[in-house]
Image (cartoon, rainbow, N blue to C red; front, side):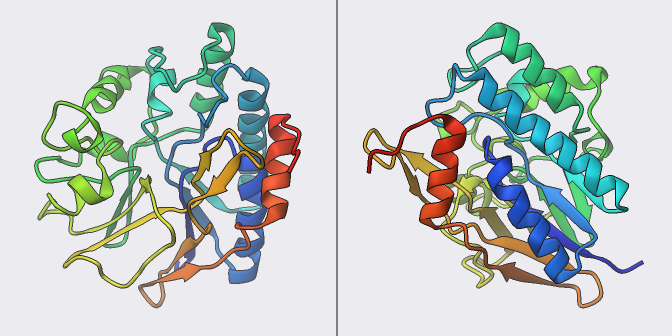
Length: 272
């Protein structure tokens, strides 16, 4: 059965803002499958805001259940920000409230996360498989308690491009510019990843391989109103099985309305 797939970059506690956009584009483009590339949690200055975490993840879980009930296929990949919750080892950027941390872990487990997905000739993961990184059969399966050691190894394997001690990072840590495209894996030259913020989805080959980054919902925090600044334009990526091609999908992500909604969800008063 030929289908259209919509691929979505990192959410970072913005599901309430991003998923309505995704759903609208699914209907407009007649997509039957959605792949989320990980990093559902953690955001600037939210390390003690348990309510934001639980509200956003509940929204995502309920949305996935509704889409699934409607016959759509929703795939959730594992990101480096998600992994610490699954292995019960908080990082500086994780939620710092232990009771909330455990609740976040339970909600992430409800998403049936997996490390990678094969979309025809494209290998999909959060950050990508660099030179020396091998795809394992279990990477395509939903994670369970039996995979805690594997998740821990992936989470610990940070490359020098992201301040780690390894030559290249794992499939949840590899930096797009400094590791993935500079040290590509000759076995997997067609990849789609998130993780590294991008201004847009650029399908014009900026390297000799078909390796595309789609982390376009990224925003940077600021101490001054309106407190958030856009990095990416919110582009999505669509894959059409029948045509076997990719299309960048524009959205209205960069707008004052997006910022206002985000501030309201975060409980921040906009004095701008």
